[in-house]
Length: 346
Image (cartoon, rainbow, N blue to C red; front, side):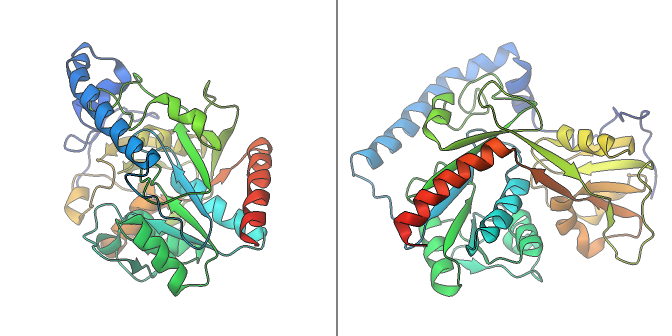
C-alpha cells in the first residue's frame, strides 16, 4: 500500500475523500453563521415532530405494548453518542440480574423489509454493522427490522428473550417502552442546540427531562450528573494469526463512526501514536479500495472491523472498548428495573 504523509502524534492530516461529516454537520458544532439560514427548515421539522407526538398523545396514533418490557437506548442528536458500548454493558447487566435480554435494531444501511434474526456468520452489508457486532459480542438474540413493533414481536416469538433492548428508536413512538435511556456526547454536547437541519437535534433538549436516565459519554455534561467512560482493551488483529500490535505503535487511524475524534482520544489514551487519520462518514460501507492510500499498521473501531473483515490484511487491527457505568447510574437502573420486574412478574 502506498503511504500518506501524516502529522506527528496527534495525526492532524485526514483522508482527503473521507473527512468527517459534511460542512453542514461541522457547522452544528462550530456555530457557523450560515447555519442560521436553515432555521426556517428546523421550524418546519419541529412542527412535524410535535404533531407526530401529539397524535400519539391523543390516541390518533397507537403505541403498541408488546408482551415483555422494552428498554430504549437512544439519543436526541444525530451522530455517535456511545450507544453500542453501553448496550453491550446493559446486556451483561441484565443477564447478571437473571434476565434474558434480546436486542432490536434498525439495521442502518441494510435493505431489510421483514424481521430478521442476526447470526454471527452474516455480513455487515446484509444486516448492518452495529447489529452484527452486537450479535458477535453479546451472544444474545439480535433482530433487525425497520418496523420496531414487528421486530419486537418477532424477537419475543422466536427466542427465549424476556426483556427487549431497543438499540436507538427513542423517536419511534409506535413501540411502547418501559424505560428510556439517552446518551449524549460529552465532548460535543448538543451542538448549537437547534433541530435538524440547522443543528444536530432530533428533538429539543426538553426531551432529556422526560426520560429515565441520561448518560454523558467520556466527559462531564451540565445535562446529567452521570458520566459513562469507555476503556480500551489491547488491540486485536482482524486476522487471528497476525502478530500482536504493541501499545506504543504508530498507527493510521481509520474510522467510520459518528464522532471519530472520540475514538482518536481513546487510541491516544491507550498509548498509540497516530501517524494519520482517515475519517469516513458514519456507517461507511468500506471496500478494499478505501485503504489503497493508507499506510499500515491500521487501527480501527470494532464496528468498522466487522465491515472490513472479508478483505482484512495482516497488519489491520481494531480497538475493543468497554463501557464503565457509574454507580449512581446503576442505582437508577436498579430502582427502575425493580419496578419493571414487579409489573411483568419477572
